[in-house]
Image (cartoon, rainbow, N blue to C red):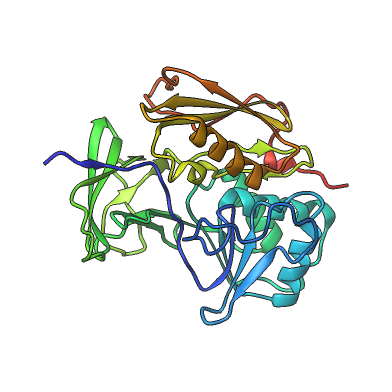
Length: 321
């Protein structure tokens, strides 16, 4: 059976505690949590039945870091969950300014992006807790969790996962879900890459081990006010007449959208595209749309969603002084 391919849309994971996500609202939601034009706190919303506090990732910039940190200090929520790129930005503020959080979270979990080594070090230094990595999809065809020894384990009881090797050690993730009886997916190609090998872990947890997860490292788009945004792919979720899209940033405060049009793409789609980017990036971000016949791939055949040519854009060296 030929694997069914992923449409490209990613989902997050709903957890109890605090979630920091650039897909505002609950991590499983893509509707705006806080209006993009809002400039004063609160930049968060509370889910009282679920005992959850959701922060808007779109407002996490130099002018608002203190508001986010103060809210965490007052709420003292034990479990923080979010995109590692955004948690690292907040951790950078805490480290750079010496902000006293007033408590130490018990758990920090990250998902939807790769946890980079620099991000892990900065998060642990700022919060005093080591971040635990998690890989999952809204389609629920695969799940990989990090154990206390730092190893990545396939959660074999969650879904039937296949690691299809394209070259030695490099595998595509294909899965069949167990949990969605209404819409079962059989051999669904997640279009993510994992690296495997002869790995062992002393934690005693059964299941296959994964060395690393590829295909989820993202660059930032930098706004004029210094805010850095990632995970913008959900903007294209319902735009079925766009075949492929790529964001290119040549300078701060301006982006180029490279679009491969489908046969039914027209003026309505372009207007909607501009509207969605304005909602998320603000009116002072210049958006240029370029129509191309195809988009370039990397040497490994991957399509990079964001290409940034902005210099000195390392998020972990953020200075707010």
